[in-house]
Length: 242
Ligand SMILES: Nc1ncnc2c1ncn2[C@@H]1O[C@H](COP(=O)(O)OP(=O)(O)OP(=O)(O)O)[C@@H](O)[C@H]1O
Ligand SMILES: [Mg+2]
Image (cartoon, rainbow, N blue to C red; front, top):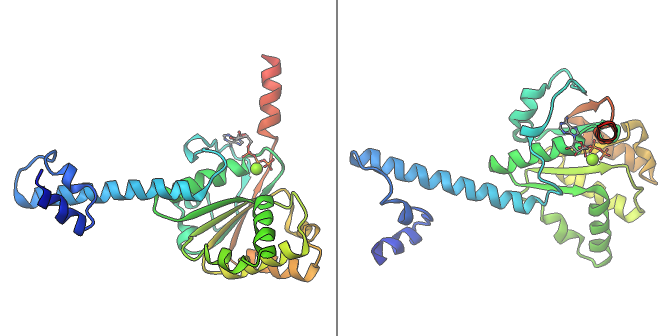
């Protein structure tokens, strides 16, 4: 491999060509160059997907492939399983709210969707709401909320897991409201919760803030209801019976 070839590849930001070019079968010039460039693109997308997965900071590695669709999710009229899995909602900057009782697979499903989105080239961020609130309060106290806010400039999908499990402080609620206003119609927001919308005011001290926040979240949202028993409980019982 000549130094000059490596240098040219570097100038053109071709990360893989120099290592690939000898491994690709040659039939004619057009076929060869096309195959070479296609491989470069493919490997580039794989690497981008891996970077996106790291940046998203998922709390587990659950995938869509291991999710069992056994009729326990009530879909809204305009969305079905296939449409949800296609991730078209991210392109359309729509929100998805998954609500239902504990252990019914909400976190697994949003993680699987988020991981697929990363591999498809989307920038995703995953937060447990309690962790995000702690971060927001910290940045607020240190006068760094504005810089935190700008971290989402290039993000396509934000997953907020476990909304409503812990109440917010006044500052935390205001910061979250600012973020949700920033994201409104510009990013796709995916929220899981044990609470119905009507009970969201339990999280906030200020009921006007709750109303304004819920309004923004549901305007372009698909609301999925999770029914049935907890997987955790079922699993525990079946373990005991065995
Ligand atoms: N439909 C499903 N297919 C495969 N595994 C599932 C399914 N539903 C739940 N599980 C598994 O059961 C466990 C609990 O699911 P998960 O954490 O997603 O529930 P959850 O709805 O987020 O609960 P919580 O409201 O308590 O956070 C996980 O290990 C998950 O992988
Ligand atoms: Mg969960």
